Length: 203
Image (cartoon, rainbow, N blue to C red; front, side, top):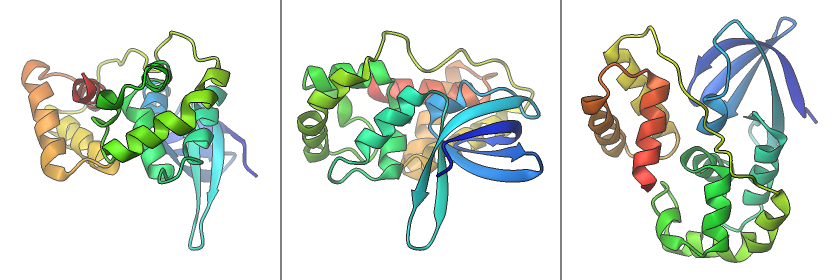
């Protein structure tokens, strides 16, 4: 079991990264909450990991904190919630806000996340209520401040749209979300566009 990786962040392209660990490159899928907190390419990085084993492939899922990894592992135990949906949930809402939604039975907020219908939201609330209380989730959002990017506006928007599609949004919806944010934030980096689009989706 690979539980943690320490190395250099070779490639950083949402929602996947590549970590160079002494010459061996590990491709890792991450939530956007983790992605926001990663350093720039070429910098040292250390992340917690979950090894996902399927019949046709092995995949690594990365997390900036062990707390987020614990929540991911709880989510994939819920009936009807797979790894992709779990990452989408972690990308679209902070651990604290998710816990509040569960504890307050806030179905309306949960169904705004892509792929989460009313039945899934209700199932999450039922199956996760006792579990989130044991996570000791604090009031600090997992999404950090995002700095400026040197990439062009067009490539930033394209990267943001691609990332949202990877998280489960339909191409048309992803483009609309990014375009809406880009109009009022024309010089934003891809990370900023993704973060604002996800925040706007559940507001």
